[in-house]
Image 1 (tube, rainbow, N blue to C red):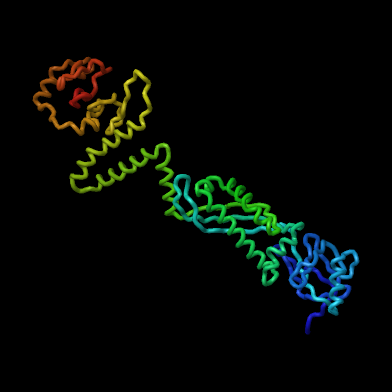
Image 2 (cartoon, rainbow, N blue to C red; image 1 turned 90 degrees about the vertical axis):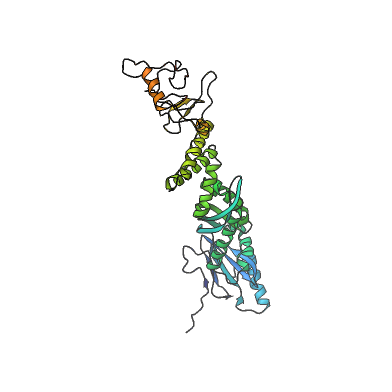
Amino acid sequence: MAEKKTNVVNWESQGPDDIIYTYEYNDLRTLTSVTVPEHAVALFIRDGQLTGVLEPGRHSVMSSNIPWLTKLYQIALGYKETPFKVQIIYVSLKMFNGRWGIRGMIKAAHEYDVPITLMANGDYQFRVKKEDIAVFFTQIVGGMSAYSTGDVNAFMKSFINEQITQQLTEQYYMDVYTNLERASTSTKVLIEPYFTQRGIELLALKISELRTTDEDMEKVFQYLQFSSKNGEAFKKYAVMDRMADAIGNSEGGAAVGTGMLLFPQMYQQLQQQQAPQQPSGQVPKVLCPYCGTPNEYPYKYCGNCGKPSPQQQARDDIGSPTAVQQQAAYSAAPTSAGGQKKFSVCPYCGEDLKGLAKTPKFCPFCSEQLN
């Protein structure tokens, strides 16, 4: 048995997420009353055109204080339509929440315009503007095959994803990543006019998460390290670290020999690059690449461990004195009260040692052991 029609039109069973509702019948009888909820408006549609809008309250089709409604009824009578054909669509003016999510490409960072994958998601809030309800119908609802909340939600999700993608892909990944709050605000400001043109007010927009693939993140991370203030030093340290691994894993002597020649030289260059400028009148010092002891620059051999400086090692092809000469020179040196040898001149190379605060373990000029 068919459901009996009534002379009362209202929004039945409205859910919290319902944006629009279309009355199931498209014919109005004489003296039909239309009830509009406080948070909504009712649109009267005839032949696909917006004829009028009813404010919240209870209205009669024959009401004389609604000129457009009376005129609509009179037109219908002229066509001898009783009841006359008209479609009623309710539109909610409440605030609605939505989720968005995008995937695209974005430039990595300033001076590093390599495109990387962009994946982002977040929340937004919106409402239909009452003063622009005609614009909302014309730009959005009027073009739909069926007037339903599902269609409106699908449009909103597609539309906001398109606008956010367009705005974020014109920025730099690291700028957005390092300040999501600022990026959320600026993106909202940029896309808000496009919603206004469609009768919608964008109340809030939040970027909750922004990320890229692990591979692209590694590229960005390496770029930021290498382009930083100490980026050059970082690169050389990375090379030295790989050299050390190669030397440690090699079975032959070639890699060890090459490493012994190159590794100290690279270390010394890093020390010289990173060493702060010394005040005038002071002798600069550099660290021994073997034991880390400061030595006056330039030096030939470390005064603590006796190992050659990188420069000295590269040109040191002359053998040290014979064991007999070393023993004779060492025995001739005076002995201090503590039992240690005290030298004013190196007994092996003849260099003056009087300028040193104390006799070092090894001669800083020839690397022979003194104590």
